[in-house]
Length: 220
Image (cartoon, rainbow, N blue to C red; front, side, top):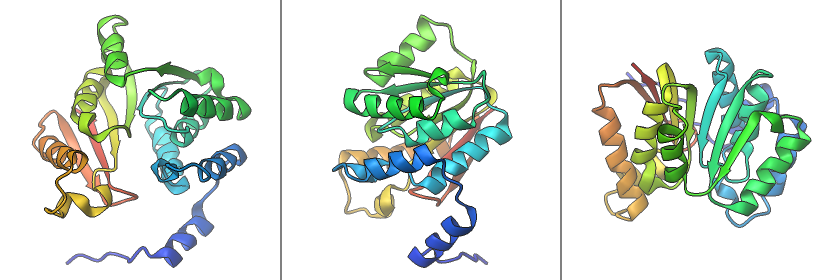
């Protein structure tokens, strides 16, 4: 029997009230991002805090983020990492990158961030082929263009150490993945991605209906 709490707006407010501990700069970044036309691309503060707790539980020191937007998840990560930790951040938008880095500086964690502006596929190829970074990351967070999710996932598995974790956001895509009337390129790419990862024997897998759906894959 499945028992599931209805997470309506009132329940979400309660969860935030009794659990959310949002850094001042994170709150400022969230409020500033809310003014942008694409503000819905930002993860929720509860999701940012969840990622931070996860990183601390893993003892992560070297992490990778594919898709940064204005930097809420990036800043959450940088704040959670130890003083000698590093997050390699990949995004293609210069304005979003500037906003993300500015808030990392204001929070005093910019020294933990290695930001690489440009096509993420090229940046990932460089990490693997030119920098010899295979097997050197503890954690990868993917939240970028959906059509390239599987390419990012494949690169993430190469870059992760055994036992490393990749987390993929938006895998339920606001419910569109189970609506067969939705046949746009992003939705169909996510359906294909979910099926492929389900069949991937290289990882231990869990998908949870938190936020917009999160996939957790631990490299064997």
